[in-house]
Each structure stands twice: as C-alpha cells, then as structure tokens.
Image 1 (spheres, one colour):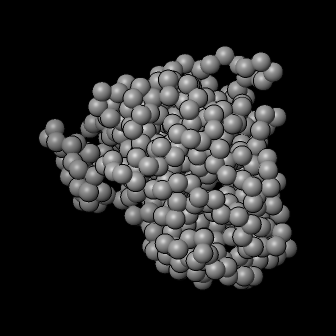
Image 2: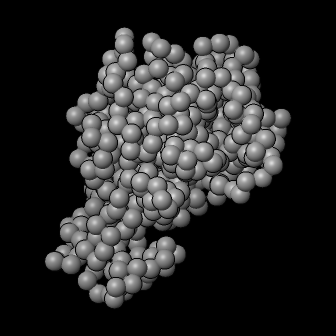
Length: 472
C-alpha cells in the first residue's frame, strides 16, 4: 500500500513526530536492519525461547511457508505448497529451459495442482497443527507444526534426481476465497470464512486429517456444515469460553455474533445472536482482522480503509466501547497484544510505507496503543519503524517479550536485504519501547529445477507445539 509522497502524507509525518517518546526515540531511527540483539535490560529476563519454537509465515506470491527458528533468527525450513517439479517433463517444471516464469504463468502451468495465494494461518489450541488457506485455489491445508510438514503429502511415484520426492496434498476444497481459518477453543473444529461468498465452512479437524491422509471417504466427512453469514466474511474469532463466535466482513459494515451452541461431543450448532451495525466505525466496510484481548473482555477489530481500530465488548456482545483513529492512510492490517510486567499494549501493523526508516530506507511502522487505561482513554502513544515495507502479520512468543512482524513488499535496492522479503524481530520486554533486534531475509525454496523466492508475506504465527496458545 505504499504511495508517492504528498501533502497529506507529509502532514501525517509531522503529526506523528509529535507523538510521545517512542516515535522519536533514537533507537527507533538508528537501529539498522542488521542490528544485533541488545543486552537484557536491568530487571528483565532474556527472551523466552524453547527449542521447539518456530515462526510460520505464509508467502502469498510464492505459495510457500517460511519457518523461522527464533533461537537463531534464521529460516531453517521452507514448506512447499506448490506442485512444481513433481514431473520431470518441461511443462511441469518451475524453471524450463533456463526461463523463470511470472507468478501468473507459474500457477497456470499445465496440471498445476498446488496452492494459489497462500494466505491465512492459525495454530490449533496446543500448537501442534496449523491451518493455512489457499485463497485462489479455494482450499485449506493442514500443517504438522511439530515435524514441519504438510499433512497429506505422499511419496511421488515419479521421484528421481530432478523431481520432488513428495507429491503435494491437494488440501480440502471449501469454496470461493477462503480467507482466514480459526480453530474452536476445544480444537475439534476449524471455521473458515469464505470471503468471496456469504458463508463459513466448518470442518471436523479429526475427519479433515483422516481425509488428507487417505483414511477418510470424501469431503463430506471433513466439512460438517456451511453456515450462512453476512456478506464477505473475513475472519472468525471466538470468545475465551468458546461459546461466542465473532464474524467480521470486508464487504459489509457489520459484525455478526453467533452462539456456538456446542453439543455433548463439542461440535457446534451455530445460531445468530446479534448483527451489529458498524457503519459509524467502518464506513468503507473493510474489516479484515480481529483478535480477542488477553483478559477475554474485548474483541479488537482492524478497520483497514477507515484507518481505525475498534474495541467491542464480549460481556455485552457487540457493544462498541471505543474506536481509535490511527492516522491518515495508516492502513492497519493485523494487531497483537503484549502484556508483561513492564506494560500492556496493543501493536497495530500499518501497511503504509513512510520515508526515514532505519538507515534512511522507506519502512512501515507499528502503532503502539497503551492499554493500561480505560478504553475511552486509550490512544496511539507512539510509532516505531518495522524495518520492512507493508507490515502485515505479527505475533508474540508465550512470554510476551518477543514480537515478529511479516511484510508484503521486498526491500529496496541499496539496503542490506535488497530484493528480499523480510521478517522483523523485536524485543518487547518493555512494551512501550520496542527494540528492533534484526531483519530476517526469507530466502527461497530450493526446487530441483531452480529457486523460488519466498515473497509477499501475509500471516505470521509464533508456535510452541504442546503448549496452550492464543486459540486455547
């Protein structure tokens, strides 16, 4: 969402400069993309990283998932969601005759059956399983987060020196434009919003796994139901007790609240509780992301085209508690909460790209909202450069002292990671003063016929398999 400088943008930058402390703090401008981690500050513990921890990033243009080891802040695995190089013949190769195709040509190659537009991602409650949506291919994939592999891949009968050893799972076909998946709090179901339609697909997770691994008997076993909902549903997120489902939209200025109404086996029987009018908060009708506050009292909604975020009550479901402006053309994407002994904040990733980032390069920013005061008093108290362009997904570690941020655009020429999509890592042990640790170039997927660069990062999740996470 970058744009050429203009008067309104300059006015916004002047206003941002007046924000307290964080926006003008020397480290926010001086730390470059390759800055090393700062020493632990007095009275704070070092980053909490377990050996099994990984950061998973969906890359929409390459249809890959980059997997970062936070202990080293390097990519240790790239999961392949393409079907290139499963056949040695030229029409099925990623690179044919030394020619690398354009993205559009790649996904329209003969008999390509891989993912198109890898987008949404979410962990199940114990972090052992991830769900990833293919927006363009209209399907959902499951990822084994422990072994870091795609569920349902099989041995490739054509495998050889120049072909992939595995044949990619075709996932589970759901419907037009599956945007964001979300597991229910008990982990038994996966709800997937079909943004190109007006319904939600509800999958039985156990049956979906059986179907993908060849132990089921067709799609009907995995998809339990399609639930009619508002037009253009973008995402579902559940209340802390798992009894309410909040549904946002990118086509209607509305919020739908459903009662999950689980049966004795924990399977849902959804029914509408309330349809909330958000036209005052989101006039453009474009709310792509939401998340529940750590105490479970508020659902926060990101209004991307209205350049705002709203807080909605869970106790009085749907009552809007406050709406915070984020600045002209801020273009908020995702949000993340960090609560620790040093503060309570919400970070909003802003898609806009501003001049004057680390080392003078253009960069997006994070807006920092202080949540230690009542909702009506909350506001943006600072901005910090992410060190990357068009910030999107972000997620914290379980200890709430590390934060990772994904970006859609490649780095600019003349910067240390020129031509690479990067992930930024922050020390957030002092939430009101996040410190950029490093930028992580995402590199490429090495296919037998050539290298496919990981690019256009969308969703990002930090996962510790076997530990209750944010969806528990």
